[in-house]
Image (tube, rainbow, N blue to C red; front, side, top):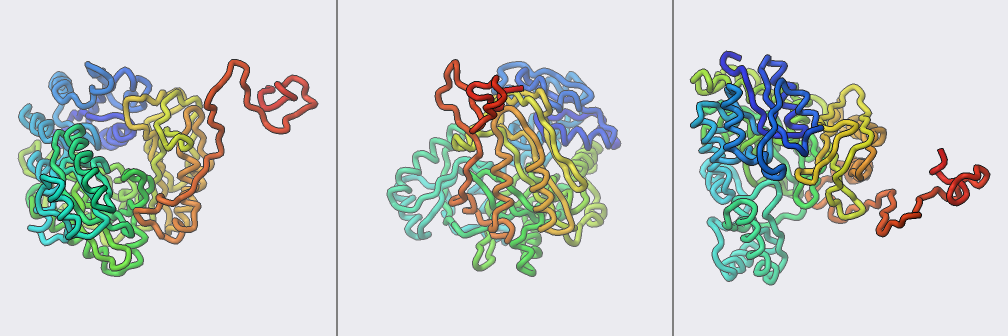
Length: 496
């Protein structure tokens, strides 16, 4: 690093820990930010310095002005946002540039262009990238929406143009549902994204969600780092991700089509830094359609790193350093030298959440009384928690990303199952058993992973839900141990 000496990580949790790791390997001084609710988070101890954010715990991580003030006070050269929070906030990226620092990510113009989904569709069309059939502009009236749905054919999906991360979407299967959902999506878009614009796309229930990792130097050059399969989703939120896609592996030539289109799109706007081009791929025909481009580091970037032996965060920091040196970005030749031919082996990621499967997967904050991960060769666990960490109600309840890599998919599945089944998290309920059930299923083992995978997936947790506890309530094994004589009743597991 020539000029990038001090880096502020404008995030929390596992992604902050992961970024700090690479920054330290590059000799970069790291500044972490945190709230009182995150006082036990690992990222505070991992950084060279940590600064407590002012304001409420619930909003402190999205107060861009406070974060920039902290950066100025600590002579920061660049700010990296990770994902979520301010990672795709145009005003934040521009404010960092105005303050004389570098935003580690694409320019604000690129964030703005792809931030509006209907505008992103127009950019994709201009780059000859196929898009999902849908409306050309935003919908205004219910009658207009119904007319569009009738032309596209049901089912359709109403989407908030400012949405992201699976939020602001509603599937409609009838005229009545279109009329009812339009107002809801518009209201949700205004509340969550300060943009009430809504457009419509045809919905493909038998499809795959496949994305391509790209990297551009901001000078018109770009490369791809293969694809990932992210079809297993709940409420449009990814649960399990794979690299490479088992569907792509079964269809010769599809990878080349997906990656070529993604690189063409990236080059067309002179994109700089890491990004992800997301596609919907029809399970029957193999036809693919552009969905959106995420102008940030993706949650699941780690499995790409495992299969391609590349550090994407390192590339982002190298790009930022070149920008600090007023060189625009990484050299074209260097970028071309990194372009991989194909993935090595298979990597799978499972997102571990503090959530209660018995209560419709609602967040389950609380104190983690014991945390122990089963780690073997080829295992990577990105986490921010340890024994004694408290999971807050204020933030996303993801506590870890469990990743494994092996020579083939069958071996990777077996390895992931071993890690999930032999890891221990005591305290609030988690989805560990749910994840294990998914990868242990026949449909998953055969690679039959469509976006509707979890629609009819049956999982019953081995747990007791205490609906109304009493002062003298205990939970005992049956039939217990009647000869011990100290239990209530007949000596159950409460006996030490």
